[in-house]
Image (cartoon, rainbow, N blue to C red; front, top):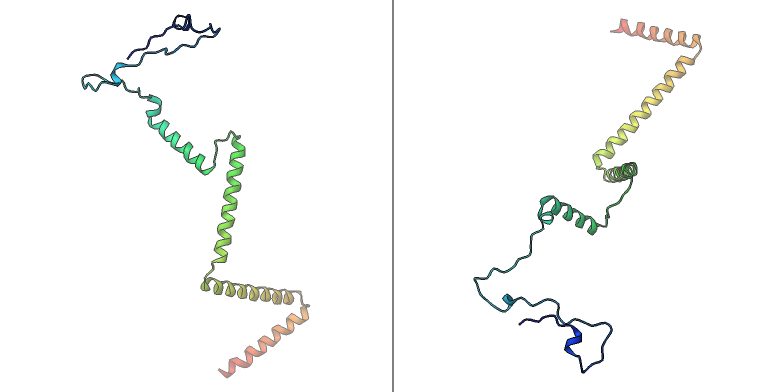
Length: 159
């Protein structure tokens, strides 16, 4: 079935008044092979786009689709701004991990922390006592040395 282009003027010359903008009926003819089921005919196929079939293009397209699903649109930000945002994100993630680690302390860790605090307190007390002894007048130091020597002397003959 073939339709040829026929100008509007020749078809309806006498019956209709002339229109200033003629409308063509069918510009292109219908192909004959659509109705036929002849296996000898080669059917036209859509050409393969080499850009779309390339592996790099497919990977890029897949990545763009994934980013769009996540809500990440490609952004044209300066490199410095990207780096600063990445650092800030990493810092926030690190803080969250530290907070979670502190919340999830085991009984052993809690006990070890208590012991560590006690040891620190004992060290501070020893330092205070030592500073007091160093700041004491000379005669108090000599008196303490005499007491020690007297105690050592009395203990030595007993043993």
